[in-house]
Image (cartoon, rainbow, N blue to C red; front, top):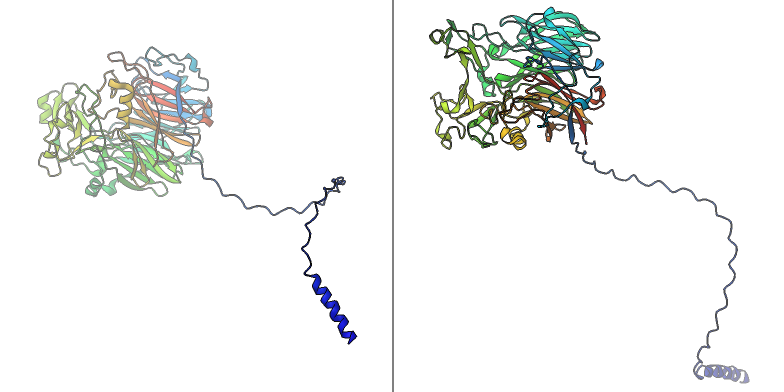
Amino acid sequence: MKQLILPLLISTLLAGCTFDGEDGTNGINGKDGSNGQVGEAGPPGEKGDKGEAGNNGIDGTHGMDTFQQLSPSLVGRAVLNAQSPEGAAEIVAYHAQNQRIFALNSSSSPATIEIINIAQMDPQTLTHNTEGVVTNTNLQSNSSINLSEFESGDANSLAIHNNLLAVAIAKETGQSGKIAFFDISADPKFIKSVTVGDLPDMVAFSPDGKKVVVANEGEPKGDYSIDPEGSIAIIDINNNQVDDTATIINFNQFDNQSAALQAQGVVFANPTGRTIKGNSINTSVSMDLEPEYVTISKDSRYAYVSLQENNAIAKVDLSDNSLSIHGLGFKDWGNWTLDASDKDDAINFASYPGLYGMYQPDTISAYQWQGANFIISANEGDGREYFFDSPDEATCLADGGLEFDSDDGCLAYTDEIRAEDLTLSNNFDYLNNDDQDIGRLKVSTVLGDADKDNQYEALYTYGARSFSIWDHHGHRVYDSGDDVGKITAAIHGSAFNNDEDENKGDTRSDAKGAEPEALTIGQINNRTYAFIGLERMGGILVYDVTNPFNVTMNTYMINRGLEAGAQISGDLAPEGMVFIDQAQSPTGEALLVVGNEISGSVSIWSLSNK
C-alpha cells in the first residue's frame, strides 16, 4: 500500500507545477563584443581550368558601297594638223608599254598615224580662257607613220594589243580592204597586210590577243551600181604571228529571213525595185546589213558587232564562228520627252505617243557583271543618203535620181524626210505637225505606214538620244531615257543641242539631238564607268554601270566654248575614246583619252575620285 501511494503523490506534485504563474520577460540583451582582428591572407589558390569557348557571333550584313564622285580635270592636250584639223584625230589607241598615244589622222593626204608621248605632261601649262575653255596645248606629235608607204586607201580605224598595231584601210567600193599590222615595241615596223572584206570600218583585238575582228561595212556606191555585202573578218594570231589570211563571215544565211528580222525590229532601207542609171536595184539582206563597230567579251569568246543603219547587233561565237542577229526594237517617245524642233526658239521637251526611236548604235562596248556579258551602246542613229555625179537636173532625173542639188549632185536614195512632209493618221490629231511640235523632226519613210495607204500611223526617228545596256541575248536591260537632253539643257540652257561646227543652240533638236556616238568603259576602284561622248554637243557623260540593273549618273565634262555667234573653240566632236587604268597610267590616276574629229585635238582627262 505504501509503495503505491508514494509514486502517486510524486506524480500529483509534478503535474501541479505546470499550472504555476506566467513566465517572466526576457532580459535586456548585452552589448556586442568588439570585432576580432583580421587574420592574415592565405596563399593564392590554384588556377582553375579554362572554360569552353563561346559560340561565334552572327555575321553582320554587308555595308553599302561608298559612292565615288569622279572629279575630271584636263591634264593633256594636242592639236594635230592645226591648219586643217577636221579628221586629224578621230580614232585613238594607247600603247601602255611606251606610254604613247596613236591617233589616226585622216585630214592629211596621205593619211598618217600620229604618235604622242604622254610620259611627261604638265597640266599647269594648260590655261583657260574667259569661258573656262582650254585652247592651248602641252603635247604634240613626236613621230608619225605614213600609211601610204605600205597601203593605199582610206584609214578608218586602229587598235593596239601589247606591241602589235592593227590599222583598217578601205579601198574603192567593190575592192577588198586591208588590215595593216605593225610592230610598235620601238620605232614602228611594218609586218604585213591581210585582206579582209569591203570597207573595213572598225578593227579590234580580242582581250587574249589571239584574234583580230573586223567590221566590214560594205556601203554601196553612190548610184548603187555596186553594193557589196557587209561582212565580219577574223584574223588569227598564233604565238604573236599574224596569219596571212582572214576568215570572212558573211550574212548569206539570212537572205531569206527578211520578214522575220523585221519583226524583231531590224530595219532595211534601200531602193529595191527602182532603176538607177539603167541598173535594176534588188538589194539582198546581206547587201543591206552594214557592220559598224566591234567589241569582244572579256573571256574572248564572243564578238558583238553593231549593224547601225539596220538597228541591230550581230553576235559571233568565236569558238566556231557561228553567227546570229538581234534586232533592237524601238524606243517609245510616248514614255519620254524630247525637243523635236530646231525652229521653236525654246527648250521644248514633250512626249509624243506614236513616235518611236530606232536605237541604231554606233560605238558598243562589252563588259561583265555576275559572270554574264552585257553590251553598252551609244545610240547615235543614222539614215541613208547617197548621191552620184550628174551635170544637171534633167540628166539626174532621166537617170532615175530623185532630185538634183548643185553641191551634192543627183540624189540616188534617201530614207529621211521631215514629219511635216508626211500625211499623218488621225492618231496624231493631238499635234499641229509644225515647227512648234514635231513637224521639223527627221523621220524614216520606210517605217510607219503599215497598210501602205500613204498615211503614217507611226513615226520612226533616227537614234534614241541615249545610251543603252543589252544582255548577251539582245534584251535591253537599261536605257538612259531622256537624260542626255535634260542634263545638257540644264547645264547649257539655250546652248543645248548645239552643232559641232557652229555656236548656235537648238540646232540639232530636229536631228538626233546631242548625238551620243563615242563610248568606252573603264574601272576605277572596282567600280565600272561608261563614258559617253556627245558628237554634236562636245560633252562627255559619265555613268556608274557596275550593276547594269542599277545605273547611276556620276558626272559630266566638257571643254568647248558655247558663246552664241563666237568662233568655235576647244574640243569638238568626240569620235573615239580610250580608257587608261591607274596601273598603266603615267600619272598614277585613271585617264580618259578622247579623239575629237572637228577640232583635230587629242584631249586627256584625269579622273580622280572622292
